[in-house]
Length: 94
Image 1 (cartoon, rainbow, N blue to C red):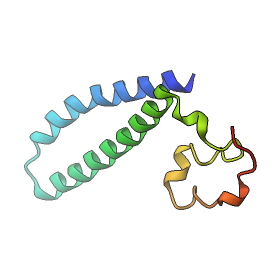
Image 2: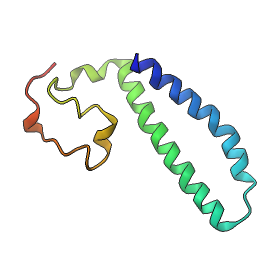
Image 3: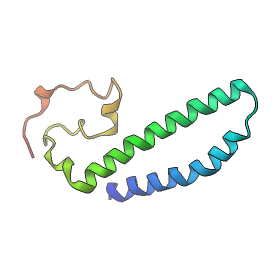
């Protein structure tokens, strides 16, 4: 189920990016344009992370993660707080 939700989210994000980019091109105020660039980079980074997750699920590579490390394959592992676990907490391999 997550596989299809991630795929749909990627498609939706890319479809939403088209009018967002057209709107971005019309910005003339430098400060607002800079904020728009930050917004665009953050969104593209998030879509990139989800695209990698989708691809890994597509090829079945996520099945080789340690079974005792659910945090390793989650999006929360991207943040410093999400990676607070250690390899010592991984108990069994899938």
